[in-house]
Amino acid sequence: MMAVRRWAGLGLAVCIAALVWMGYLWYSANQTSAPSHQDPEELRTLLKLGNEVVDVPQRLVVKWQGDWEANGNQDAYEAAEGLSQSLNLPGVQQLTEGGHLTYRVVDTKNGVNVRFNWQEISEDRSYIIIQLEAAGDEQLSALTELQSEYGQALHENGIDAEWNASLQGTVKGEHTAGSTMKAVEDGIFRNMAATKAESYEDATTVSNAYEVPSLRSGIQSGGKVLNMQVAVHEDQSTGSSRVTIGLPVITIEY
Image (tube, rainbow, N blue to C red; front, side, top):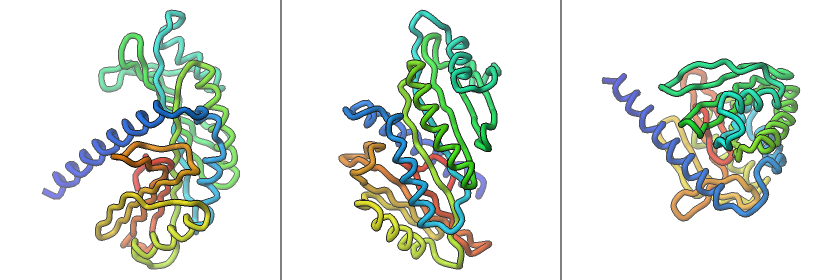
């Protein structure tokens, strides 16, 4: 029975994540400002905030996601190979995943783990996810540079992509999730004008979403635009709390 509940919870989480990402795409499609690949400062803002509100930054994950549509010049495989080359990655490996042809590259660049995933949705349409993951000051600096370079390369290859980022770290000492969230929020409010818009809480986890007008990245949620999500999970085995900050939402496990 416990296993059934865990899988049911996982299914609900996947559904929520899908709906949230649809809201992100809707919001992005209706933006009139510059494309997000021209906004590297938001990632630096996330890093600065993370260094202030967590004791031990563990990792930063950045994902570029977008659609490709055939224009008659290349098929999906050729386009995937061309994009991989423009990112200075090895040639793609072809496999079938979920009944769809997928072209994948897993590589490391300057200590940053890179995962390139191009999946054919139909004969003339594909969906691309490029994930960058790093930990440590040198690797985080390299990731920041790659984030900007990869966004520009996607744009030059005709892919209208949006990025999201999640930073994760721990707060030392035995504190409840609620008290840790209060301390994290104090750090957020010192650095930016933010308004808490949505909240969730259970015995060991608190998750809040915020409206932050200074941030361009956002998702539509009801009549609000959410620009940042913060989650705190209390690890009862160690007593420490794991803090995750996402722009505009968290897209990794917290």
